[in-house]
Length: 420
Ligand SMILES: Cc1cc2nc3c(=O)[nH]c(=O)nc-3n(C[C@H](O)[C@H](O)[C@H](O)COP(=O)(O)OP(=O)(O)OC[C@H]3O[C@@H](n4cnc5c(N)ncnc54)[C@H](O)[C@@H]3O)c2cc1C
Ligand code: SF4
Ligand code: SF4
Image (cartoon, rainbow, N blue to C red; front, side, top):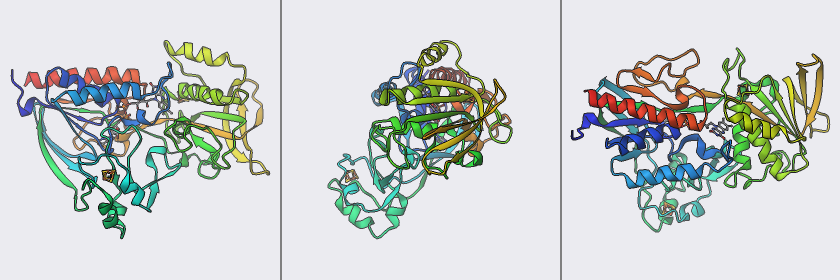
């Protein structure tokens, strides 16, 4: 049967779950449209240094997916876009999409002249605010689509015209404005993923107060060659090499005052990050303070391998508080040793908080009614007839599982349009 508008599928969010859902549906012959809030596709994995358990860079998998998108005329995508409204029913949804201006069009060759001309700097969101970028910027080195963006503050500034004039390809349009697009689709996959739990809420750990207390997502950027230090893991306070690194597990997780659930991946993320440290500093001492270690199925092998390193100490204890000692250099962790019930004080010069994953639906719910669980995750893959949830918006988990989830959601979305 030929595709009609109402046989097309909308995928919201282009992390590994959404990308997979869109590509699988398009390769099965269905017109698919991706709506992504960021100026680039791929979601949070773009910001990881390596994937466990094989420790390969995420770009390997992402590049294959981007190639599949480029080769397939059945997929189109909008970046810097969000779904404002959904009405209708399975087989016949009407969707309003808001497109935010990038101020740079498809003529951009990424020559970088606009960034050279620009003096305004903004916080680099891609590196979780650990450095700054010019306000005319490429979102990250491997961005897809590979195209610059102008920050709205730059467009309003006195510099705007100078930046436009600096572009040899006439790719900058200062008059771009937000606009909306109306789409008719038969079914929808909602795959808007997760965000890191806000470590500023963890007063007892001094995040924001002590620069050498960082989070696990920041550690991914520190270790990455595209990160703020070009891959060198250093103490943010003084740029020195850390000698003792402490990973604080369940930072805010499994805690009624913060995230009451287990994110399931942050134990393995810390073990992976311990291997990043080990690669750069063969003699560094590494502590992993944990309540329980979660490493299921074949990932247990990875845990066993990391445990063999005698300079990595797995310490069963809950970190109660982090302070700075009088020399202003070392951080002091007060730990309740759950094996001996003693209170211990252990010094480290870099602390990594293993914060958990919060669903983006906890602050940006779907613009149509669907059930959520107590933590804001969409409660079921079958969110409502014709709307399917995939990936970490449904449950916190690994890439291999969100890929399976995206495939399953694509199948449901196809069945939905075929049924109507
Ligand atoms: C520290 C850390 C390390 C990790 N390391 C690994 C690892 O080594 N191996 C592994 O398998 N997993 C790892 N993970 C887990 C991995 O990051 C997730 O499994 C993966 O990101 C989930 O993909 P997703 O598509 O569900 O969500 P996301 O990657 O969050 O993608 C969601 C997309 O939706 C977009 N979006 C959000 N809201 C909207 C909206 N309203 N409208 C439009 N678009 C929207 C976002 O911009 C994003 O592009 C790690 C996680 C953490 C915290
Ligand atoms: S917008 Fe123009 S100047 Fe800036 S990178 Fe693109 S082509 Fe170059
Ligand atoms: S995966 Fe580990 S660190 Fe993360 S919440 Fe669960 S037990 Fe805590």
